[in-house]
Amino acid sequence: MTVLLGDVITALEARYDPALAEPWDAVGLVCGDRSEPVRRVLFAVDPTAAVVDEVIAAGAGLLVTHHPLFLTPVHGVPADDPKGRLVHRLVRAGAGLFVAHTNADRAPGTGVNAALADVLGLTGAVPLEPAAGVPGAGLGRVGELPAPMSLRDFAALAARVLPATAGGVRVAGDPARTVRRVAVCGGSGGSLLPAAAAAGADVLLTSDLKHHPVSDALEVDGPALCDVAHAASEWPWLAVAAEALRRDLDDRVAVQVAAGTTDPWVFRAGQES
Ligand SMILES: [Zn+2]
Image 1 (tube, rainbow, N blue to C red):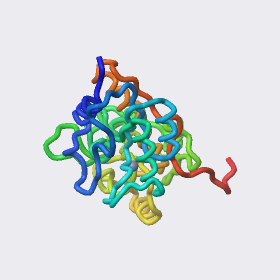
Image 2 (cartoon, rainbow, N blue to C red):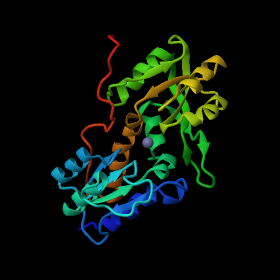
Image 3 (cartoon, protein in one colour):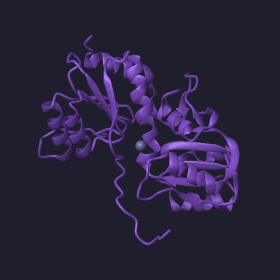
Image 4 (cartoon, rainbow, N blue to C red):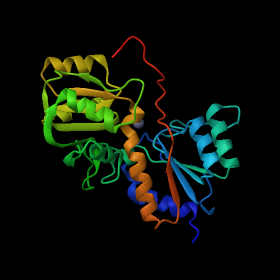
């Protein structure tokens, strides 16, 4: 039975309620015709040109990304603008673009933060910053590792379960420190450091951490910190969201995760390991 783009959007919004998005965010359908059939859906963190190449090569009728193509208002989408060109290419290929951003971060169960906690094997994970009125929803997660381990081993675990990136996993804290209670936040989660400390976390894993807050956290004996690539921290969500959509639509659409991470960093010099 044919699935229309409108049906796919209904299924996605049932899991990633637009009401959970930040007021400044830009989520939902960017381009696409709700009355057209969709046979394949591709999931990626960012709507880059390489990802659009993949959408077209796969014959996907919908690209779902975590990050918005347009976060601020635009006056037009001319094809000689890098982002406008992506819209043209998608529309010509008959593909829509749908964004689930901070609503996917906050979603319970199959959201970005829940997926990050799951891939690290955390149990009993609950939001670090709960969303009002929706059980299990909120930013970040804090939960327990099945067994205590050293910070060094935890960082190695993160490196193993997340996609490899040029930056790898950067660690602040004593490598021999024992960690069991783990806080995570997909994307730029430095603002959740006080919440992670208040939740008794031994370590906070997130991305885009800055020098001063990290330095200050070590001075006050706060949680150790693991900084991973932004796109890598959100990557676990792609397979979870894709699988959830396939199930929600009773296998009537094929789903696919983009082949590579969209981490923009290419290489690192100066450290031989
Ligand atoms: Zn992000």
